[in-house]
Image: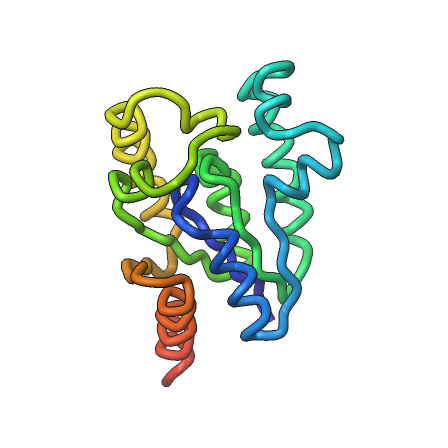
Length: 168
């Protein structure tokens, strides 16, 4: 059973939906940001501040390589993890990539951006970041989900999309 990777902008619901999906499918859940925080003993914000974004992206790539050797997990990927071509390739080859394509303006208005290093600043900067990342998210995705009325409805949409893929 391949891994299921949830990708998308920070705050789109990857961790919330990943936890719900994990319970529904009875598969282990992992959040890449939480894993890196545990492994380094530092928050993502601290890593960005002390070591820089490039160092953090290197940590993500290393974790991505390790995850590609596993099976059966539900993985919530940090919003920037799919930015590197190597990471997109690893995700696509080792699992099903599900892009949670939630409206970026809605995310910015609804989600507390404190503690999110790339969520600081004006709304327009967030919207611009989404526009830059959108083609990369779409290139990585096997499935794109656009239903976000509730996390439960989103998870149901993911399960339905996965089931449709499996049909002959």
